[in-house]
Image (cartoon, rainbow, N blue to C red; front, side, top):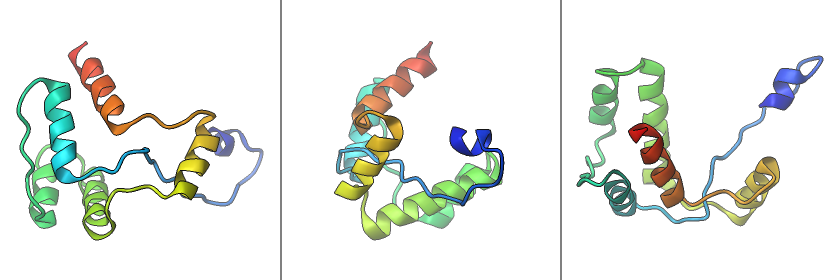
Length: 113
């Protein structure tokens, strides 16, 4: 993203897959967030219309729509990165991506601060 910001002219658009080395299911993500936040978290189910409506009630519409698209992809394709996606993301970061659990733990610590 900084490469685009610092470029002297327009660069072609790129899509970056934000991936983790973990295979994440709804049940696993719920367990990770429960552990990270120190309280029980429940999976809200697979109704994407309800998810989007709920998110719109307290956040921007664009974010609700983006979250819907992300959840739809998880439902259709699963949340397992390919080796190519991991290699590309590792190259972009200059290091291996952190686990989903580590992301959740770090995020929970930041929220608590």
